[in-house]
Image: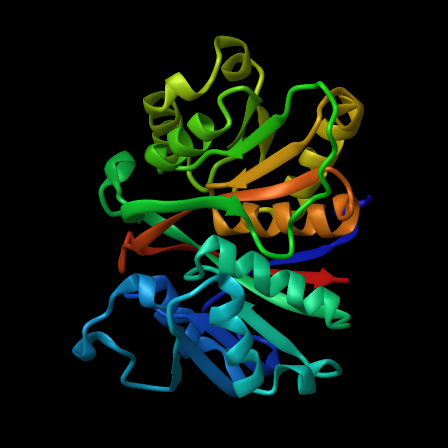
Length: 312
């Protein structure tokens, strides 16, 4: 796959952006989400309000249309939304989705739905924070981890052979989630995927500190030889994973390959694209630990805004 051919561009908040027919963003209280929502010019714009953010009534959006989502799996949450906004009617029109506020499993399900429903291309926006609110101590998820399973739409085939599994963890700040996934797959060989170049230089150091905090999840050898991919580039992330699996002959070497997206939403999109393009129908799955709640605001300011065009 030549992921370098995919289009990406840095957006300038002061310049005029393209106009879209439909814009969707997941709502939270971060400045970077509201700035993009206000800036985007679209015929229809929707906020999605997920129950995991646990908003009070006075915290809900006061401008624009919003759709409140019920609890459930990523499919149970999003399929009624797609029906409500007649998403299938936009196949030949322009769609833009701000990935920044989405939870990762829901973002991945959305990506798979778009590809499998016959959309030819969709634009995604991702906004980098100026910094996370509490540096390496920032809490992104809270409550108990009630389930660790394959993301719907990303379940690989099973094979019964006497080989170890491979677990690739795109490691972010949530060391508890890293540890949970690693513990559940303790017999697998675990390889971290680190965001480098990072969003900002200090964030790479913070990421390393959180990864080290979950050091029992990794062997000394895996920490010495991680996979690197730019934290803000889904296409380079997809390329890095694709190359690692093929260069190391992982499909022959391991019983099953699990990829766990716990880093940036840009890398999460890259993991989804890599799976959908190259590994669907093979013993490869995307794994995720589901928690009860997510923090309403984790970042301060805006560093950069990116536009990615996903072509299916």
